[in-house]
Length: 541
Image (cartoon, rainbow, N blue to C red; front, side, top):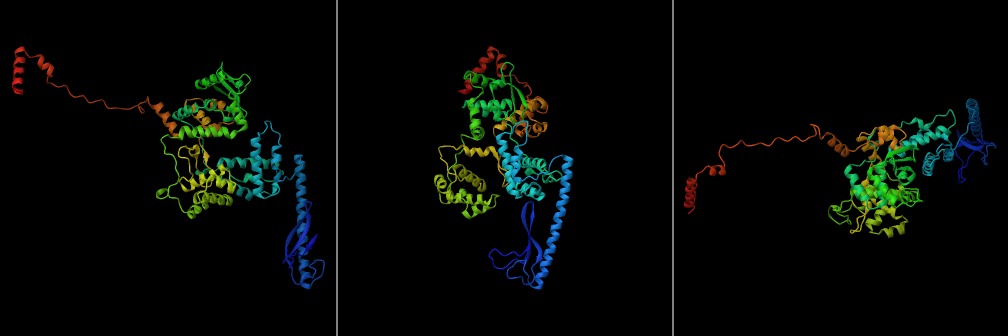
C-alpha cells in the first residue's frame, strides 16, 4: 500500500501521474493523485528506489497529497461512525447498506396481509432489475437525483404517464424502506405531476347502447363468449373475476351476485339483471354438479392461457364494431400511381427518425429489405433470420404506421382479424406504445358510466365494482364519450320545450264562396238539366 508508478498496459513507459493504493471497506482501492512525476525515475520504476532530485521532490509531494487523502477518509469514517451510532441508538436498529441487486429479494420478502400474486411479483422484479442495470450503481445510498431523472426520462419515451408514475411509486417505496435512516430518498426529489397533453390518461372507451347491442348479437355465436360478455357487462367485474365466478357467488332467490375482487379484496354485490339471468338459467341446464365455476371452460382458459381470454375479447370488439362486410378487402401493393412505395433510402430515413433502439432499427430495416425489396415470404424470412411469425408481423405493422400504407400481403378470400385489431388501439406520440381503448375492461367502464347516467349513487357504484378509493371511480371509470352524452341529453331533454321539435301549423286556405259542382247540379230543375245536356251534346258535335 502507498504511492507507486503505474505502467501502461503494453509495458512501454509509465503514466504521468502518481497513483496510490489503500484498503477501504475491506477491499484494495486505487486512486490517481493530482501530483505528476517529474524528473527521471529509476530504471526499476519502483517508488522505493531513488531517482534524480526532481523525481524525489515529486515523490515527496505525492506522498504528502496521499497522506492528506487518508486523513480525510479517516475523518469521514469517524463522523459517519458516530452518526451511525446515534441513529442506531435512536431507532434501535442496526444500519445496513443494501445492494441494488438485493431489492427484488428484499421487496418480495416483506410480510404482507395479502400475498402478492405471481404476476405482480414478476412485474416488480422486472422493474427493480431494469433500474439496477440502467443506473449502474452498486448500493442504494449511491443513487443520485440525476440517476433518477435520467431513468424517468427514458421511461417517458415509451410508457404512458400512469405507467411511469406506477414505477416511480414502487421504487420510491422500496428506497423508503431499505435506505439507511437519515439519507434522503432520491425518488422524492421528482414531482410526479404532469398536466401536458402527452401525459393525459387515455381511458377505456365506454360503449353506447347501439354498440352494446352489436356486441351482444355477435357474442351469441359462442356460448363461452356470450357468458363472458353478459357477466362482465352486467356486473362491471374484471375479466379475471368473471372467468373465476363460482356458483356459490350467485343467489338466484334474492337476485344478487356477491364476490370478492381479486385485485382490491373488496366484497362486491350487484343485482342480477334479466339478460344475465337468462344466461345463468341456460348454464344451470347444462351444469355438471361437480363444477364449481359458472363457466368451467373460461376458468380453465384463464388459468392456462390468460392471453387467449384477452385475445377473444379483442377479436369480439374488432369483429362486432369495426368489421364492415361491404368493406374493400386489402390487396397486395400495386406498382405505380398513389400506391407506389417509397425508395428504400427514404424508408430507411423514416425508420431512423423513430425512437427505436439501435438493434430494433437494424431488424426493421432487414425485414423491409427482405419482404418488400426482395419479395421474400414469411417462411423464408423466419428461416433465415430466426424471427417468429408474431415478431415479423409486428415489425411490418409498425412499418405500415410509419409509411402510412399497407405493406403486408393477404389472402383476398380471407379477411384477416388482425387488420381490425389496430382499430381497438389508439396511437400516441412518436416512440410511445399504442394504448388499448376497446377490450374486456371497456365493459367495466360501460357499467360505471351507464349506472351513473341512470342516477345510481356513486357510493353504490363503488361498492358494486370494488374500487378501493372514490377517486379511482370518478377519475378513470365515469368518463362517458360524447356519443353517449348526446344520447343521454336527447332522452332527458326530448320532453322539454328545448328538446321537443317545434313545427309551424299548416297554412289553410280560406273557404271559397263559390259552390262545388255537386252543389250546382243539385240545385238545377229537370228542365235546366235537360237544356244543359242538349247544349253540351251540340257543342261536342
